Length: 465
Image (cartoon, rainbow, N blue to C red):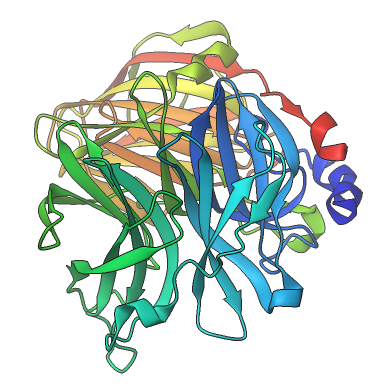
């Protein structure tokens, strides 16, 4: 805690640090962990290095929010139990016991095979956590003769009164890909300290995927959804789940976000919304004193076509200032600057008509000399591209883009959540312009609206105590 506190001034001094995307007080963080809603608060735990702004020394950081926008930083929740041979606290998830009490599960790393450990809160505010005397809750011995490598990242769910856990990994380190799997377990006591191995619930027979991390398996709109982090952009599958076989059977498959984010987690709130959390990478040099954000919390649903939809939580609309609008802008090969809408901390809502053009490009964080901070391109073939990241939207005459700029990072949501992309920019502090152009004739921006967004509040008072 002293190490983090000493780093806060350096992190806070960076003018390009995002102001409404969630971030820790300082230093490095990555995967969202233990996301849950409890007693009026959204709780977010996360992989955290309190000793520097690069990966290492994994702990669990902790924060809570009433509204998904403004956050109260809390003391570090979990640290490695070095006396028990634990060197790192890796990713995991949260669940409520049958009597409604929270538990968090995580992968314990030490000079041994990975183990799954559990912790319980010592108070109803969930500030202090105590590791279970029954740890390890699960070891690789539960698999019998099956050898599971890289076994980690428990995620939990309930169905028909029973509590289940899935973990990622692979079953062959001797082959190049094609052996990534998700394993399934069921709790056999109410205290969640004893578990039975049920089998492999999902095989990822893809030669390009060596291992599966951070599996999330959950119900959504009458279907089951599986999200995996396969050491490249996260993928999702929509389908059905047979817990007796056990087997998850995909019916639809897509890329969750082709941008520079990773390691999903899921929570639900009292209104029944399913919320997606993702680690947004920034790849900063250590000198900045901070590294990474969380993407905006995304509300998930399944569209009429059977594929996933992602929308930014509407609570962020509360940060909007006065609306700024611009008339229709015909587009040519020469970029047209959109007058009256400038900024590095904004929300943009733009409708695009392709006409006969092969592609339309929107440039954000542009300098006065025309240098582009980041480009968002829609092609006639229905591809949405942000830098090197590309995803399929489908062929349409018109497209709608919602773009969230937040200093160093940005997010793009297209066609009512059909696609979402997270990215970063190295634009300069004064690079605030917005411009658009087209490759071909007849394209235009038919409607343009923008809002400057106020910073979210990040309360450090409880963290410092």
